[in-house]
View 1: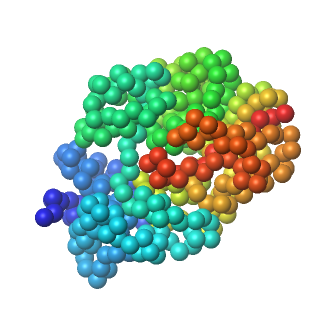
View 2: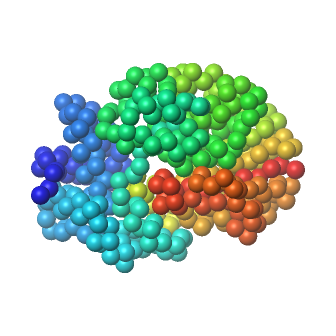
View 3: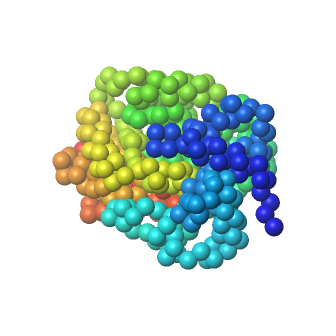
Length: 374
């Protein structure tokens, strides 16, 4: 018997009616909850979950039924899959769970297809050396290492005392891994060239123990405003914000967390499966190459360049890294240590960097390559 409240399907149907190529589901959900502020935290979680489930299983539902019935059908499929993932054949997942065009850009391992049909794992990043304390305070936690915490409880973390005191950030494990690869040292000078709302900026600054400087820049003024508020809550005072490219060319490290097609987030953001197109991939690969070239001139000799994208396409990962290396022979490829290993992957010019699949550690998919300026 289903444990879903029928009213959840009705709310989800209203959200789905507003979402589309120009209105992402997560944005529409936030707007919907503002206009329906009487909904409780549990109801909001259920509605959000039903919306994302609808996108995961959209090619299994009966399009002749009304949207509310399609949502209910998708949630029933999700319940069945959660109980037994092999109840849905992997051949069906390959044909229906992802768009046809991605076969030209990436492989589709069975484990990957099953992983992206599950609910995503919730990861937290504790302040350095406080993961065990945070886990004890919140409960329902499993510690991964490097201050990464997997939260498995049901409380609204944004309402906790620990969140308001800056004891943790909600940050996916793959995103945390990028900063581990960068490995900034206290007192260094770094630039986060595509900072967004600052998840990786904050992590770099924390790893530097509030010493040195991390410059953060982004095209969005709104995102930088959010970053500033997050830095204040986390009590990180070594972050400087630049609306444009910061001056100087003597950086110890530059992080290019570039705009990408986001295929690595299709578990967390299934709506994007149906709004991303192959033309987007090619356009973004061009942007990524331009960003790497502009970042390269900012490094001092011996400085480190970190390239990260939360996607899995060949055009945006290995192909970009190989093109950059060919155009910049004075950069030496560095080894990258996977998050679930203590041993770095040996640098391979034919396949530079490391591709982290979502099924490896139950995180977003991510690609990271690193070079040192010689």
